Amino acid sequence: MIFAFDHEVMIYAVPTLDDRDREVIEGIEQYRSQLRHFIGRPRRWQGLIRRNLRARAMRGSNSIEGYDVSLDDALAILEDDEEALTADQRTVLEVTGYRNAMTYVQQLADDPDFSLDQSLLRGLHFMMLGHDLDKSPGSYRRGAVYVRDDEAEEIVYEGPDADLVPSLMRELVEQLEALLSDPGCPIFVAAAMAHLNLVMIHPFRDGNGRMARCLQTLMLSRNQVLGQEFSSIEEWLGRNTFDYYEVLAKTGQGKWNPGNDATAWLRFNLMAHHMQAQTVWHRVQEADELWMKLEALATDRGFPDRSVQALYTGALGLRVRRIAYEEATGLEYATAGRDLRNLASAGLLLAKGETRGRYYMGSAELREIYGEVRAAHRGQIVDPYKTPPLDDQADDPLF
Image 1 (cartoon, rainbow, N blue to C red):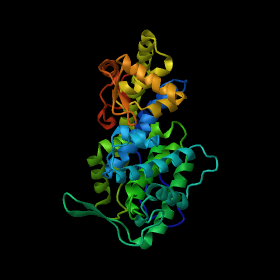
Image 2: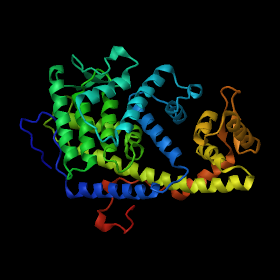
Image 3: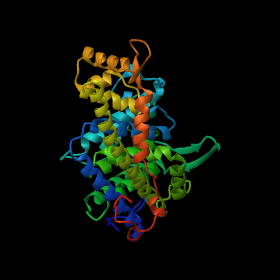
Image 4: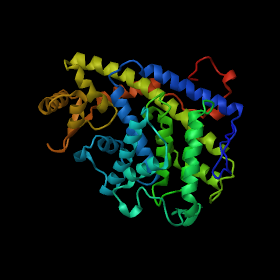
């Protein structure tokens, strides 16, 4: 895969794909096709699983930088539910900034007037870090930048000279425009190169890792095959942070080395896409069966269909909050509160906390139902580069 420029290329080039890489990409596309058809029909649980996937991606990307929040807190940040938050203020500000940037990325997914340029990237950075003006949000760095391993007490990466940043970012935008316009370039490849080059250029004083992952998701969302929550690998990267840093270190070799081979990085990303797609596929199957079981339970106990919104969240082990239930069902304040109290009185939800900060958790009965569904659908997640080639596998496209 070669792209021609009218000047010497100064950033990491796209590696050549071999047959195995293309087989892995084919496998990813098969999962995406299955997901697209599965969620193409209206399903009542879709809004909840989309919300949960967005929260998991947001949580994963920020955890890489040391900003850890629970899934409940990530959901509360998505919904601006300040009363439900338990994380410290600094962490909330950082994750909220990331949420703002990713919300804008979501809006750009199908924008017919979309234009990828440096102003967009700097604007996303400002949305992400605008709460801390000391970090120069939206502005390129004017000095040297280093990545330090605090545990080893050593510098593990040095970015290129600050004077080179504007021209390197211009080069990055040109490369991405070329990749996006080439029908022969898989979107996963283009997105991986966006991530690699931005994080290696390290154009900002802070937030470069989050910006690189944000840009990768932006590229994926422009593909418009699936929503960003079904395409992002940020959750997977958050669960595999050590491997993520290791492949970046292997590719960069401690400093700005754009002549280095990016094959290991590209394959790492393709593996991540494949394994995250497996995870999401299992989750949507679980969601479908769990919802049906909870609908039957609600009917059997004499509760309205809308109550499944709360039962579903509780079954997953997440906090059921009145404000979230109210928004999901369109109910008025009093009706939403009464629904939750009735579910608690029936023993399906467990009330926690005082009146103002009250929330509900799923009962043991709900958790058991989910456990049974999960056991039936959650298969082993496999590394596509360690499985037999496609010709040696069964006819099932989902392996």
